[in-house]
Image (cartoon, rainbow, N blue to C red):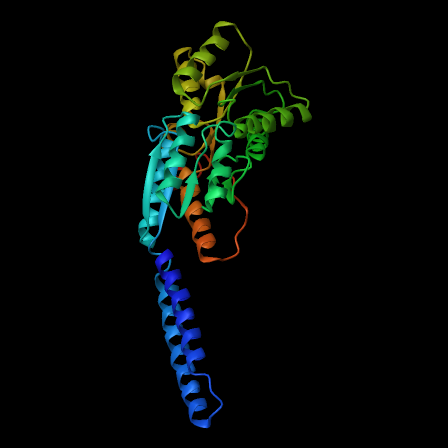
Length: 334
């Protein structure tokens, strides 16, 4: 892409030189100057047309992700790869293995490689705060997905507070005013997980419903299963689980099934990953908010394309909130 832009500048410089060399007050020289001007204009137009057609094919994107071992991240990476392949772009994918310091170091490597833009899913916004500054100093556009950091060019996000609101409202709709909810929160290092919990808790409180307990399930199956087992062992009286992810929901369902309580407890999730879809199909999960991680990847690349093309773009793009339940789950499973 940079070589094409350089071609335009060189053609413009050549045009200026040719016209300067043709400057004269005679009629003959005037005609010559006019001819030269037309020839140069045609040459510039040809180069500009070529740039317009090919400028965004010589592009390399850096994609930094927390962990490809996590389905959410793997699906996002697959979408990035597909979107870039459609555009003829190259992608450098770096997996930080859920370590913030490693992610910062890897993004610094991407900057050193001279990538045209960086798309990142920050594992911990505080730990990754310097990425934005580094990209700004290098003149490389930075697009974050799912989470924000201190500085970026654009972000593709979900209003997680509103997702929490939607989960609480769905619990009241399905269980009724006598709902007794517990909440499995995601990693507290992620502001989006805190927003999700706040949205649910504050919605319950506004409806005069007390949240029985809140535990951090870390979006992990085993950890969430242990938390729910602890609630059961402690004799907690609850009839609804609000979960921060389909992975957490799976762990909660395992614990409830082992205690023969699943028929008495409604589990409400978010993500819409494969595991969530399968649990809805089996009737074990009441519903999950559809936030397919692939959409973050597709939209992130679309925003990058606009930035590199010099087009107007939204600083923040929000994903829509949709429910997956028994009425439509087969559509999502296709």
